[in-house]
Length: 293
Image (tube, rainbow, N blue to C red):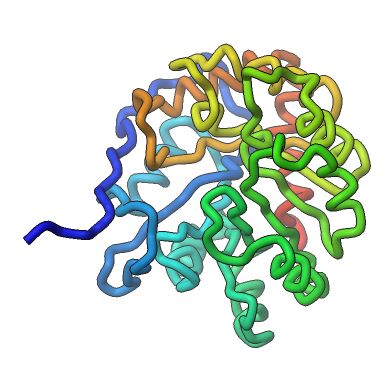
């Protein structure tokens, strides 16, 4: 009998190369996923993929190898809205991790309070796969989580939102746009959606992650067709950018990246040390509130 289970993703490279530069104290990986075993956490029946068998210990080992002090773990649709995976990871990290949750529209205030106390600093809306809450529900939830100091993290294709800055201008909380808005290299940095992203960040209402260039690149590492977008963001809004590995790089058809190489890529995107340290340390500390607790 043929299985209907989603296929297991390829695992990450477990031998990260040393970056060519020393990461500064407090360097932060602002986008990664951690998974738990199906027992006890369970897998969502409608998940898009089955994760590789790598868990929190492998992720922390990668951070140690690269010299990354802190990280933000983003709840994956693999486990649905059972956020105990990231709650437990944060608890086991000794203050090293914060989290971004997946929550349903009918989430209780008590559950929101529990997640906030555990170290969750926002929730995610996936407008690409159209899983979980979508835009209207996210706006309603944003009003509810405003009291917690949370933000909303959007995974979206920025060229589907040429008026992104206007759409999000009156959002109840700040927003974070994943992966540079998944820019389309065929359209270039002058494309209306990408320019709207820059305006959003310049308004002080949004942030973006320099991460996962392979998600829309037509090339292999170093994903040169995405570099112009990263350079444009760094030049325009360095105070509103953070960086992430996107570990363990699930659902990739391209060759698996090495996380040491991804660190070196940031050095190419942000060659000025002061700017790069701001992206790696200062901006994440402000966004995720490491010194708020």
